[in-house]
Every structure is written in structure tokens, then in C-alpha cells.
Image (spheres, rainbow, N blue to C red):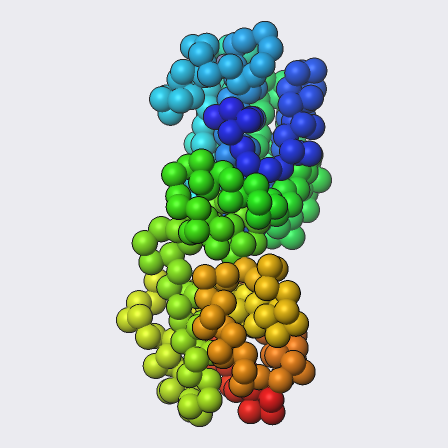
Length: 328
Ligand SMILES: [Zn+2]
């Protein structure tokens, strides 16, 4: 729970530390960034720093408050996590009651609401009511993937901190330090899109299933001509645990790497462990075909998020991929 444990995000951390040290932390903070980038860790560390009883170097890790935080038993820290479910009005009503209580251990209480985009409209309105009556002793820390999925009236009451992707080099160092193999860490860091959480998920058993499926699509591209054929490839591993958008994301990385290999820029390749295989596959593609396929996938994959017909959209995308390959 120390600031120094967080990988990357130095700009946001410096600003937050300055605010904590000068006791000028606004009453509501919104941490924005993509999934797995480290929003939860920053929210948790900020809450620990705000509740820490030391005079400086907060969070100190040793005071009574910090020890309670470490034990997940701090009476003045309330944390709401969506765990993929909506955050409901009942939870915000509980929060309203909790917000009215005086701090137990010190002068402050902190509330963390992770995945604030999962607040239902009534729950968001209930939270808004609490935010409209700021209390000096109550700090709100919200996290979300985007400000656009939140009520404007909530966003406008928060100080926003946007987290940018972390450099692959920094992620790789952190992963090796955490005990992952250097080879695995290198590939996961490059494929993670600058998100430590994503890199760690890729290194879990089965973490690369989406990439395996994307590679299978590219390998079998010349032979497959029907939608059912595509489905057979996508379900190759017999698991639906990973989502179609993830397979498409991995396809984008693989096509990007193939383009780089074709241009001789081997050192920039993400999937370095697949270089030989990709070099073989790229032989069947023209540079123009690769560029068109990559452009289409990148443009259309944005439409996948939150689209109820994502499966249909993916299948259409894959068929277009086949066309670009055939043209090559
Ligand atoms: Zn402390």
C-alpha cells in the first residue's frame, strides 16, 4: 500500500502526494483509466495516506490506522466493488447512513467506489446527493474506465486523475521482481497495453488463450470459408472464458507484428516468442492487405465494447479479414 509499490503513473502520484502532504485533498476524486491499469491500487493507497496517523511519509505502514488498512479492518474505510455486478441504490443508502457517522480512529473517513460506471441511475443519483453536501471529514475516491459512462453531475464534483498506459520496460521489471520469468514478463508487458493488471492476467494459466485463438485464425485463414468454420476456430480451445473482443485485440497485435516483421523492425514486435511462426504466416500476405486488415480491425473493434451483437460483429470482421488475405 505504499506509493513506491505502484508501477508507473508518476505524474498522478506526485500530484496526489503533494495534495496529501499539504492537506489539500479535494473531497471527491475520480481516478480514470482502462481495466487493469492500477486505478484500484491508487485509490487504496490514497485512502491509506488520508487516514494515516503519521506526520509525514503517508501512508507510513506502521501506525494503527495503516495496520488496520493492511488487515482490511479499518473502521473508517468503506469500499464498494462491483465485481462485475451493478452497484445498487441499497448500497448507496447504506453509504448515506455510513457517511453520517463520525470517524472512529481519526479525523477522517474514506469511501472508495470502484467501477463507478456500474452505479445504476438511482444509485448514481443517491451518490450525487451525498456529493452535493461535501463534508470536510469524508473523502470520496471513485474509479471508472471513462468519464463518459458517469453522470456529468457526478464528474463535475470530482477532481479527475487520468492514468496513462505504463511503459512496457517498467512493467517488465515489475513482473520479474514479482517472480515471473523474464521471457514471459517480456511478452506479457508488450501485450498488456501498458496495464500491469492485464500483464499479470496474461501470465496466469490460460491467460494467453485469446492469443492462441487469434493465431489459429491467422493460421487457418486460407482454408476457412464459412461462418461455421470461423466458429470452429474461435472455439478451438473449448472455452468461452475469454471474450471475442479479446481475440480481436490479439489479432490486432499479431497483424501489427506481422507488418513490423515484414518491414524488418523485429525489435518492435510484441509477440517476440512467436516471431518464427509469424514470419511464416506473413509470407501469405501483401503489405497492403495487412495494412487494410489492421485498419479495419482497429476501427471496428471500438464498436465491440458494450455491443449486444458483438459476436455477429466479430464474425463479420473475420470474414473481411479473409477478403484482405485473399487479395494479398
Ligand atoms: Zn500510517
